[in-house]
Amino acid sequence: MVTAPPPATLPVPAQVLGLQRQARREATPCGAGDLVWHVWGAPRGDQPPLVLLHGGSGSWTHWVRNIEGLVAAGRELWIPDLPGFGDSASPAAGGDADALVEPLAQGLLALFGARACDLVGFSFGGLTAGLLLAAHPELARQLVLVGAPAMGVVPQRQFALKAWRHLPEAGQLAAHRYNLAALMFRDAAQIDAHDGLALGLHVQNVLRDRMPRRRLAHTDALARALPRVGCPVHAIYGRADALYKEWIVALEGAYAAAAPDFRGMTLIEDTGHWVQFERPEAFEQALLAALRAGASAG
Image (cartoon, rainbow, N blue to C red; front, side):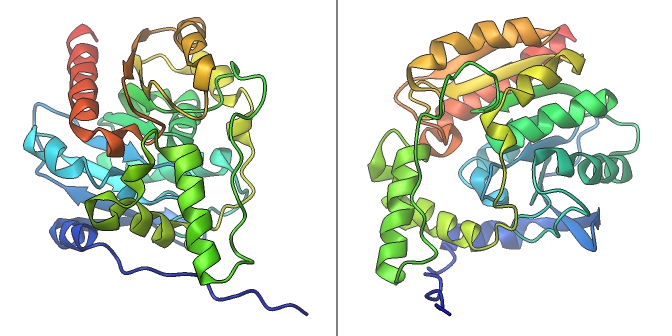
């Protein structure tokens, strides 16, 4: 029997530790344990909670460069570790985005009652958000999809990732860098920028991913769910998103055809898939503008 090498680890980035100390932690049931929610900011009578869903092999830290800016803009943030990721327990059954729908729906109802949130989903979290609102449309007053997959416009997968668990520590870190460059960033310098923040987050997150057999992101599952989402839907992508590459030009039409109340798509230049990390100020400007427009026209 071949024993796998121990996983490579890096220290938790200082910025993450600082934000953790500022957060309030809530929990709702999930499988045999808890769905963990991290909360920043104060409740606002004139604004609903802003719920941010992270991407695959991630955690709340996919939003680490946006929390302070969005709180400063007056929003109360609720960012769960999705079931099967980070500090949250795995869902009771299933290993893909559809298995996350009911624990998230139950959590939102327990936390907010009949009050609808503003819902934002990044990548796998965007697919999850679409499936969630297709089943429970009353939970959100509007939906913003960021770098979401599963829109059915790409004829084949546009990237390939390297396996890493069988490698020695140095090889694992090299594979993590390769994967971040292949999928997440237009500018590979982002991997080690900000005192190695992106690499440190990624290493911490992949070690806590208990949902490794996800497949729905490579289908048209989001496009098929959106006709049942009645609230305003917005889309934000990096122009160089590795999920789509040259097929990014087909996305706006696909959204307009699928979502009954599609309000438009923003492409952020010089940015890849992890758009909110690579260009946080531009992303936050686009997100807040979409949220204001959706609320005023709703």
